[in-house]
Amino acid sequence: MCRKCPRLVCYREKVAAEKRRAFLGWDYWGKPVPGFGDPRAKLLILGLAPAAHGGNRTGRVFTGDRSGDFLYKALYETGFSNQPTSTHRGDGLKLRNAYIAATIRCAPPANKPLPSELANCLPYFEKELELIRPRAILALGSIAMRAYLGLLKRDGQIKGFAKYPLRHGASYELPGGLPRLFVSYHPSQQNTFTGKLTETMMVDVLLAIRKFIGGK
Image (cartoon, rainbow, N blue to C red; front, side, top):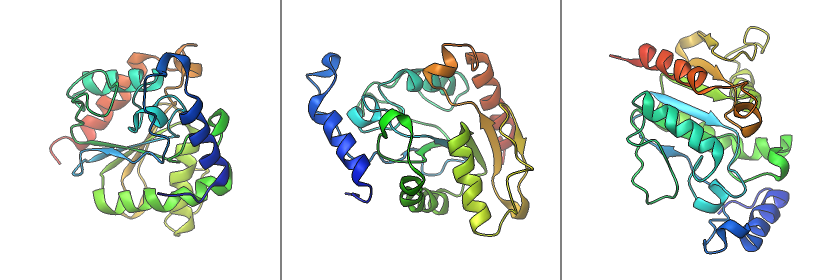
């Protein structure tokens, strides 16, 4: 089990021990949360991090929190999931042609990972890219997008970020046969409750991705 980031280890285990009142009966996961989905997926969805009482509790990314409720409903409506909800690891959820990873695998305090923590987690995402070899990447929010583009810049595959601004619904063709990059605002409550990201907006992005990867 990874313990590279002392701050994150302390936080994830503290949350798992103290729990939230609504989940006192749960045996919290309290460890790094692995990626999840179809190992042959053409779409890789990159999120931010497990929620303290979501993925850190259930052990599955985007499971058991409001952001996950929003995302899985949209995935179901666009054919990427077999059911619209995800409450725990054994609930029967299966992703179709999609795989979900996180920029950082441990719940960070205030959902704000440090640059050093992001760097420590990057090799796990690199390995997933190597194994899955997707045709499309969906970055959920600015941190996920910058993490992916930063990896490409580090390896000399792109020169910088200026050509790829964060804009919901954007779609970028990257050089060298890299997966096409699609962008969405993160389905955080801050975005979904204020209407910055609506269900229709999320579905539209996923439908554009389905059209791109369909038949390929």
